[in-house]
Length: 210
Image (cartoon, rainbow, N blue to C red; front, side):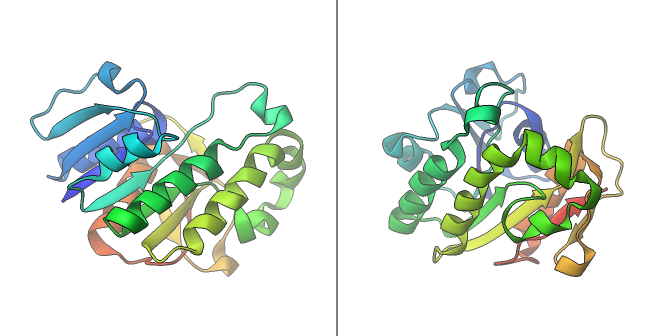
């Protein structure tokens, strides 16, 4: 498969690059700092571009079979004042994919986005204090994806951790099973690649927890 990964220079995005390559796929890694990605592979193309720029995104999706969007936001003023990064970049991507293809899209948001906010339990209070303004924009991001005609899946990881894959992550599509919990970024990357390969959760919004 030819896979475009948006937000590929760090975190889950970088782990997804590694996992997709290990699974035999061809990867185009889009990030403003893509040239600094410290992976060299014959099936990896480092694509320097801006997820907010339509022309850049259109060039990046050309020839791809599927797109993974894994956007991150560094700690800073946005956590207090809010952001529109997620919704704006997703609007650009969905419009470009609708016009030019491909149709398959996997987007990573987080547990607490959309209709999963009520599943946070004891984490609800710190979530509302620290993350609410950012997740308000992720709510809009999810609505853009869900209202599209694309073959989408939205994955919502729990509390992210570094480290080697534990192999214990569970992908939970049913709301009754959603609960906050830690999950390693490497295991989320595995869930992303597995979803690309199987389409098991097409037009669904599963949680991913350890």
